[in-house]
Length: 334
Ligand code: CP
Image (cartoon, rainbow, N blue to C red; front, side):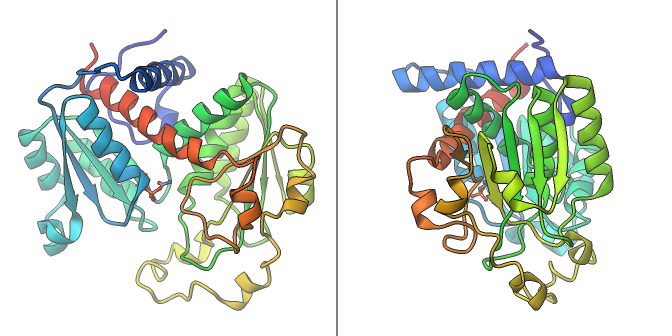
């Protein structure tokens, strides 16, 4: 078991090897059990974490705030629009100042082409761990909670067929960071990962190359297809979720509100919705997962997300336990 985490940044799960991700999972399960038993876990007494949000959040913000309170510390929520970053204060200055006031910094910044650069720049200057609460490229907390949920539901990860499927949505152009983190992580656990999307919603080539490299190293597989039915057939886990057309959106126009969420190209793929009929194609024990929030009746029928195969609420709850594990190991630990 690798247990050296103290002081490290948590920007991308690729920065942690398999044994280290195993440790994160083990600690998550331990904290979940202790939470269920009402056992106190005062691992981060008097520690302060700054949470900077450039965008909205329900699960991420509250899993961090509640999680740190349960560990005996305090999370300070910062809406970026009320910070001097909105007047142009640099990532460096923000990181150095907040480092002097507490024990870690966490940030969500999903703007295409900006988010990961901002987080990386903060990590360069911060004297405390910097955690990624979702950027334009990665959502490591989500991918870790997904891994935990699959381990709970199946008792194994090896040889699971896990299909990450693009889905139609009208709510907003969702970042690619969830499917990117999933397609990179899951092959490291020997899963047979299928990435299915219509033409025009490709993930960057370097992501697929890196995911295939991970598959080769750890015994998983990665298949990319535009055949939605093939992705559902026999899958143990399906994750039908929207992501934006990053090739268009990386211009920054989407972030500036200059690109319509619903256009003709998107409307042509309305059929990419998770339905009961499609769920019937999955394995007998196949489950439906989604990071949430879901665009109900566009991405998925109510009958599926509220049905017996849906594990979305367990998946969301696991955001708490995995967040606590990451904070404990990075901010405390040895
Ligand atoms: N899945 C997720 O990150 O949810 P929030 O946007 O509510 O934080």
